[in-house]
Length: 245
Image (cartoon, rainbow, N blue to C red; front, side):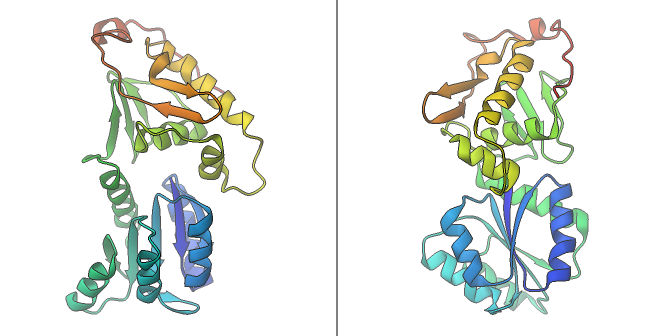
C-alpha cells in the first residue's frame, strides 16, 4: 500500500516511516500541508497519516483543505488529543480515524490495515478474491488454505490488485506503489512480476485470476469456481511452487 505521511517533526517522521515500511507500506513523507496537497495531486494513496502538528500549521486545517479540494483518500490523524471533544472535532472535519500519542506500534499498524481494507470493502484483515487469500498482517498468500510462496514485491502486487478488485490498474500505478515513483525500473518489470505470479497461480489452476487489458494494465476479478479454474479438491493435489527471484 502507498501511504502519504504528513509530519512536521523530522525525527518522528523517520521513526514512523520505518514502522509503516515494516508493515508493507511505501511511504512518501512531507512536512507541510502545502506539500501534502502537491503529492495528492500527483499520486494515488491508500492512506494519509496526518500529524496534528505540521511545519506550516495545524494538521486539521490541512485536512479541511484536502476534503474541500475533493481528495477522498482515507486519513488517520495522529496527535496529542487531550479529550474526546478534540478527537470528535477532527473526525467531523473528515478524518477516518484518530490515534492519540504516545503511539503503540502494533496499534498503529492494525489501524492502518483496518482503514485500508474497510475502505475497499473488506471486513477482515485477510483479503479474499475467489480462492486467493492474502493476510495483510503476516503478508502470507494462500490458495484454498495452502501456502503459496511469494516475494515481497509479488505480495505487494497481489495486495494492490485485491484492494482494487475489478478495476484496471495501469503499470505506472504498480511502479508508484512498489518503488515510490522515484528512480524506479521501467514498466516492463511489472510484466515480469505478473508473469511469475500467473505461473504460480497456474499451479493451482487459477492462472486466469489476473487479466491483461492491453495498452492499459492489469485487472483482478473474482472467478466462478464452478466454471473457471479447478475445484478445491483438485487444488489440494497441485504441485509445490518454488520462490521466484
